[in-house]
Length: 144
Length: 144
DNA sequence: CTTGACCTTAGAGTTAACTCTAAGCTTATA
DNA sequence: TATAAGCTTAGAGTTAACTCTAAGGTCAAG
Ligand SMILES: [Zn+2]
Ligand SMILES: [Zn+2]
Ligand SMILES: [Zn+2]
Ligand SMILES: [Zn+2]
Image 1 (tube, each protein chain N blue to C red):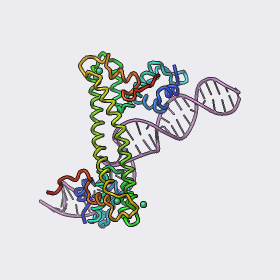
Image 2 (spheres, rainbow over the protein chains, first blue to last red):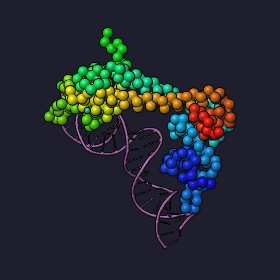
Image 3 (cartoon, rainbow over the protein chains, first blue to last red):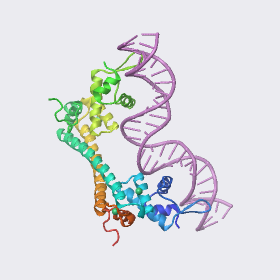
Image 4 (cartoon, helix red, strand yellow):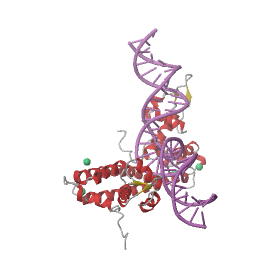
């Protein structure tokens, strides 16, 4: 049985974060001392490590709550349930990457168009593009 | 001179958002009616469109505040200042894309390892990977 | 018996960019 | 002159995942 700071060291989570996860039902201390100190078993540590691993991959706390409930009773949950959660997360990630890549292209085009030199910004093509009200990537066929 | 809802139609921003931007110094109504109604000039519209364009590209409100102060007096600001802001934003975007791509690879590997079928999750390789405490991408050379 | 490190709780603060609510005033239209 | 649409403000709520604070209790070492 280890205390919260030791669990923190083992998992790389801060005691604050561990308590926060507990409040959200992700982590539990299977024992408390008389004074109320949390004590964690080996199984508690494994659960906390599971949470940490899932978090590192990018799962949300809600996703993790679902994965943990599957973990608690694997026989009554299917691989499909697990892949559904995973695929859904992957979809979100793909969507976000696509959005960011659009920004990336816009920013790269802006940078390519401007010298970046010490001359004043009177004729800066970045400013001009923004003033034209169009993103440099979205600028396809707006008027005839 | 147009009212706030018309500015909203022209820019695709809601009146709420326009007032929010005003509170943060991005947009201003150059006139108010006696009753206090905001009235926007052509120049105000162009400024709002600038904000909208910059926002669409992904600039933060703080970035936009800087770009606007350059726009107000282009002769005393350089192209370099403009590219600095743009490059800094691009760096952030690139960094975020890299993080998301790491997640993407992890999630893809997880999905590849699991059948996703209706069998129960007792031997689910996704669960096993998470229980091993390692992300499937970060799993290089941890022990000897 | 006194430090000092660590633990407890409830609850507030952080970040970004909105988004909405309440309560009341204005304005155009029928 | 109603009625409805639209405007005003201040301020609260939203989201996610922490992060920190305050005020106090516990415990091992010297
Ligand atoms: Zn289920
Ligand atoms: Zn330039
Ligand atoms: Zn400057
Ligand atoms: Zn599986």
